[in-house]
Image 1 (cartoon, one colour):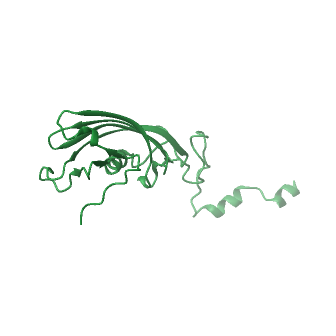
Image 2 (image 1 turned 90 degrees about the vertical axis):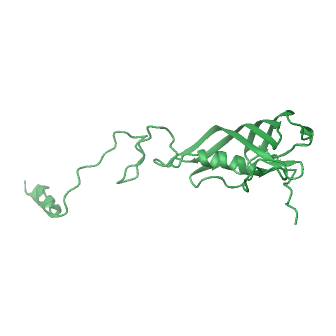
Amino acid sequence: MPPRLPDSRSGLVIDTHELSRRAGVLKEITQVAQAPADLGIEVIGVPLGSPIELSLRLESVVEGVLVTGTAMVRLQGSCARCLDEISETEEFDLQELYCYPGKELDDPEASRIEGELIDLEPVLRDAVVLDLPFTPLCRPDCAGLCPECGANLNQDPDHGHAEPIDPRWAELTEWAQPSNDTKNKE
């Protein structure tokens, strides 16, 4: 069974017909594609359908087509310390050699040109997901949340609690505080 061709309607699929398999032929592409599903990790990623600005250079070489360029994406997620929402724009470098059929350079995992189409999604996924921070922060000096009550320490840096009382002495604290009966007698 022949390999399934990528969906040419996707903004992440590029037609290489104009390169005509002649080494040295260049094509520059600037386009906007929609983000595919699951482009990220659990705490941060690219929202489904958000725009991806691609700026690419396709160069025909003997083995196939060398794709280099950048992808500008919007990241969205949560800070690992304070749980505030993070939304920022990030640029990722892309570089991949897509081999012509029969020119895989002895690498079974090499990216291939299917028909005259190349699919950028796996390369984009590798570039974005592997470069995302495992513990994203809203800012480098994020103070996080209070471990006792959950207050955001970025909003209240002077936040604090009274010194905890040793449970063995907790009942003695009642003796140190005057009761209502003692106050009434005075």
